[in-house]
Image 1 (cartoon, rainbow, N blue to C red):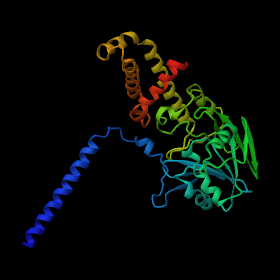
Image 2 (tube, rainbow, N blue to C red; image 1 turned 90 degrees about the vertical axis):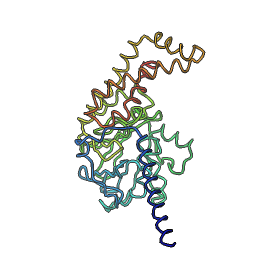
Image 3 (spheres, one colour; image 1 turned 45 degrees about the horizontal axis):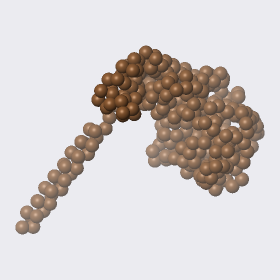
Image 4 (tube, rainbow, N blue to C red; image 1 turned 135 degrees about the horizontal axis):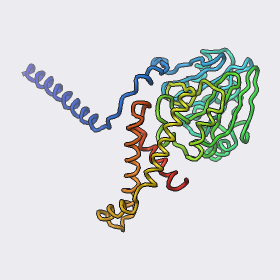
Length: 339
C-alpha cells in the first residue's frame, strides 16, 4: 500500500511538473518575437561581473564609467576630490565602492544630468554617507526638485542658468544646458582636453533610441541634438544606458536613423488620403465614434512607417523591431501637430 502511494505521489509530481512546464511554455509563446541582439553589438559590451553587480572602467586618465549593465554613471578624479555624475538607484549602493576601487580621493561634488529619477534617485543614499556633498544642477532641474520634495533626489546646493564651468584641482568640467529630453533641461557634461562627453538619454550605442525617441518631450530639439553632440571634440560618449560606450560614429548613425524615421513619417502623413481612410473606418464604427475612426487613421500611418523603417534598419541597429513603432508615433505627433 505504501509503495502504491509513493508511486502515485511521484506520478502526480511528474505530471505537475510537466503541466507547469507546458503552461510556462504556452505563456512564453504569447510573448512577441524579437530579433536577437546583433553580434557586432554584443562584441562591444563591457563585461559586468554578476556577482559583484557593477563594473568600473577607466576611459581616460582620471575619467571612469560605472555600469551595472542597464545604467551608467561616471566620475573624474581631480587631485582635490572626485566629481561624480548621476546616481541611478540601481547603482546607488555600489557607487562609492566603485569610486574607492579606482581612487583614494573622496567624492566632493555631484552633478545631476537632469530630473528623471531613474538617473539621479540614488543621490539621497550618497548624501547620507557624505552629508557635506556639493550638488550641482541647472536651474530648471532645481526648481522641479524643489516642488517634488523627493528625499531620494536632494535639492542642489548650487544651480545655474545655461552654462557653468566647474574647476576643481587639475580638472575643468563644462556644463551646458540643452532641452532634447526633459522639459526642465538636460546637461551636456564635457571635459575639455579629455575628449570625454556625457549626455544622458540621447542615444544607445549600437541600438535605436529607447521608446518614444528616448522619451523626448521636445522632438524639435531632439532632432538637433546629434549635431550639437558632434560639435564637441570627443571620442567617448556616455549616454546613460546599457554597457556600450558611444563614439562619433554612433552619434552619426543614430542621427541618420532618427532623420529617416521623421522623414518617413512626414512623407506618409502628408501623402495619405486621410478622408478616404476615415470614411472607410466610419463604415464600421460610424462617424459618432470619432476616436475609433481617427485611431484607424493614425495607427495605419504608424504601422506603415514602422514597416519601412524595419526593412531598412533591422540589420544595422538593435531594437528596431522593439521600439521602431514608438519612434514613428513620436514623429507623427511632431509632424502632425508641431511641425
